[in-house]
Length: 291
Figure 1 (cartoon, rainbow, N blue to C red):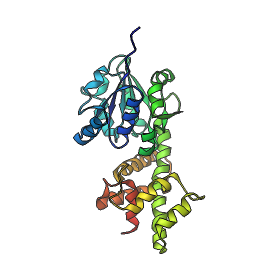
Figure 2: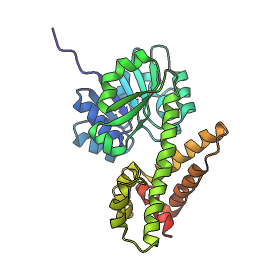
Figure 3: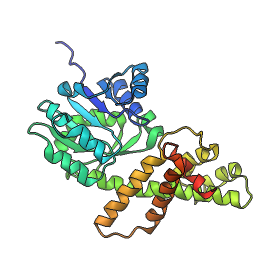
């Protein structure tokens, strides 16, 4: 009997977190093609053994298409219309939306899928650090049989969290997660800036408090980069959290939920972006306390 060929995956969005995710799939034995409009990212992908293309032509022969773009607008551009992947994908294939785009955007895409093309709602959390180790958390929503069909690919990326059968529920879980992330990064920045204001050495304060009751994953992860300054390695940008905090605030407004702590955090990301730091690491929101 001849060996079964590896399943073909088109991975759209091989940026800071998408590229290590695509690498995990390649290591797991999948036939992966990365897609990114930026030549630098395609060059990085090629250097790591991935095929890369500017537009998703490979989707026409893919078993799975993963979409890991940044915004609802980018998702719509990638998935919908005459040149979108939904019209290219073969019968029996699965589009897995792993971007953080909100319930409405992923439902629009799912509703537009032609017969025979299935859609799953699977946003992820864990950042670059856990993408590199294949330990992301995957908020998976959609048809259970479809999830089972792509389970080996999902499990190569991390742990699947069952969020129900309704498309959009994965995004709802992720919205709760992003509210916490948005607030915790700003809280960590405020605490370290407060230490500086007290005349303390933040390099000593950080390890002293990170392991205590006031610690958080974001303080431990972002804190060291906060102290490195604007040249800190970029793993997630200020611009991403302008987008995510605004997305979550919009969702809260839609359901009439008052979220004052989120609103305060959102204002800090916006102030950092307006200061010209939109492309800097999100840890640099700390600079809004130093101006």
